[in-house]
Image (tube, rainbow, N blue to C red; front, side, top):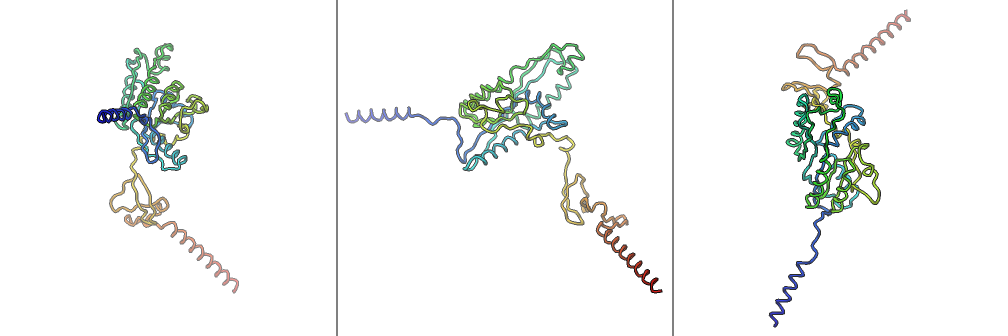
Length: 330
């Protein structure tokens, strides 16, 4: 009987251990923890609203997509530093998703535009490491730009249908949250269609950071109600980081800067000019007064010239004073 009773008690303990409530898998911030981040970019929305950035910048403007994550992660770090007493968590950018459309069956004249778009997507994928989620749009042989369709074809009624981007982004964000693939979503979007997905992601215990364009974002994103919030952090606006997010012109990006020390005053300087070995370089202040002894054309420095002019003027004043005294004595 004793052996049977021990067997029953052991079975009960095993069963009770199996049915003990397990810790939930929903991620929560812990001091010294690692916060896994994923970025979800609505590329079509961003492309169609770049005019807002051109207007805010008051000039030509293109986004450097490689800097979006940099700005977002910096804002997150600053937020944690300002709001947490404990040490802020480390941020790990797990993956970046870019959702956009790919035109196909376009007018032959637009093939070059299509090739440029393919190169852009290749840059995002191979250089920046973005995961591309692309959906095709059938243009049925029409021009890609509406202006061309109106002027060249006389057909203002055809409108390409782009319906799957919002759904694909929302479903992917929700699915990855459900399988605990990330802790924090950086959502680069602005359409109100994402509200249900953002709400469900937050219900799963995930944090959301909205990165949007002021003037092109849903009102509820920028001015949330106390009972309906879609972001756990202050909303980040592109307009607040225009200079950081600007894609530098190719000429500026390809410039190689060389560092030198002024041969006269020792001041550090940079230049795009590549000097020859043992060639003296001069700062802006001393460049036009540099010693060109190698050419036999010696030029005084600015200080030397000023000192020389002062001495000459002093000598002239002294000589004139002496001459005047001698004339009065006579």
